[in-house]
Image (cartoon, rainbow over all chains, first blue to last red; front, side):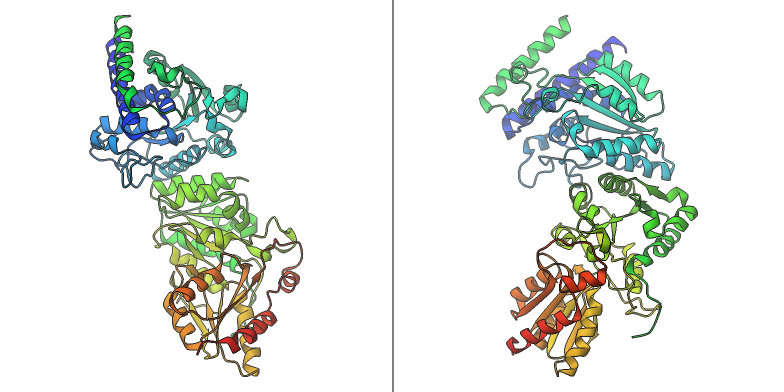
Length: 280
Length: 317
């Protein structure tokens, strides 16, 4: 990946994180840490991978994305707003009565989302169904499913993982936000998932790895993954609260909110980190 | 009633699905490893590209159907009532009902018709679960022909739909050319001014037998086949309740949350009258032939007769 492209994506990711911090402080959003861990993944997918038409959200040939880790939907909302699916002003109404942006995704309300979410572990099955439907219709679009790691403890995920492989769903790509944290602590202490790659491989998946906060690493992994027939999974190593030091300190608690008076400090920290990154 | 071969509601599924696939190329059929039970083999060989066995995985069945509906398909998801409404409830709620997707759930071997399989297979609370889900339509037909027509009519229905089908052979209530089964409708099978009997599924047959017995005792029962539990045929039921002033509801389901509750909700808010409920008294099922279970769980025409005899003197005039 060209260096200036990576810089550009970093800049976009910074703006996305800043809006997440603003959303958190304005709306009392509870899932900031988890939303931050997924921010670079969403930016890479929405700016580098997905074939979309923001002016025509239901374009039949678009790539689809099912966000299975529904609590982190603020990151998706920010990305959709920045990609032009709806006004950025909507972000400040997140989870308010009557809002287009519900606390967990309700697909009928929000332009640009391909499926709802909220109950964990359901996304991959929906993605499989979309892929089968597209296959029937002869549409070559790809279907991405972003999953949290904690939700892989749900049995329904593994039911669906078997289906992706046995129905040879070559256009299904799972992207796992491996921040190693769930509500009550580290995944490996609560209900261990490792060796996750071997588990998925034994289910008939091809598995790739990346640093989920490094665009060059993501680029390399996506290039490799998208050049083969799926089902394929990318395990992206991430950190809860990434980019906002006051949130990183709180990990691995993923439900942490941010107080209104902490917003400017968090925004300053983000700007500083970005400047340091650019200089380095 | 015309004498015809005994067929179960479930027997209508395979042929109806073939017809639906011939009629509309959006139709796809998914099942959770129960092709043989429903007789889907002909279907699968005729439409191999539109038949999916998701294996022993009801949640995945529902999720896959939801995904297919999201790209414009009309999926019919076939499984046992107990595991569909029970095990996959969360997937039905979140992935199908909330986004109002046109997935049709064909729930077979419902209630005590699962017979010898025992309590685990005998969904006696599925109507309650499905009825309480916003946007879900709930149908419980009483014979082969009404099942067939409702399945065919379901194609154009907006939103999710749950059709609960027993698997024991039953006499046919309706002629083969009868197609008066709109979703949301009901059928007045017998007119009478003494007591209204609302029934669904296999209990419609018991209600008709009960009405014949009651007639000999001078009680003229009005029998309504309430095949559409949600939406309920409110006008039909209300006008009958106003005529008779008392009601018996008969269903092969827990008395909590099913047709009885639906009728009572209407009666309580619009025309309060005494009602008796014939159903399973908040218990699980057990193994046995369906005839034995009907007797054991008080789901026979004699129980409807007693209930009618009890409620009739209390009728509101």
